[in-house]
Image (cartoon, rainbow, N blue to C red; front, side, top):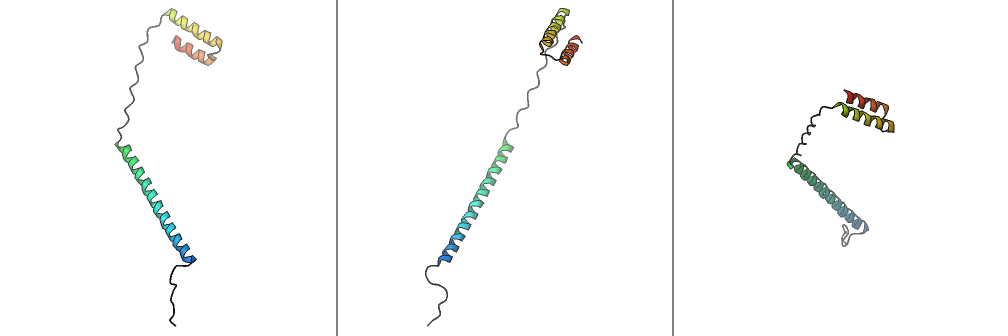
Length: 106
């Protein structure tokens, strides 16, 4: 009787499990590689788009303030009256009122 070497026919349960594990592992490795490659390409495209985009336009220069009109005596008195009313109503604190009055009188 001749000696049989190895199994002939279908693989047993352990062989089927091993083959399934190899196939699943290969599929997972391939999927991960494809995902990494896609993410790398997206990052490269985004970097290229940022390099090719024109720089934002510079902000417009600030508008020059209108020239100050010489204040007349009655105008100053009216502004002081307005400041006093705001201070009395509580809209201006003592420090704010003092600063505004000093600016107005200087």
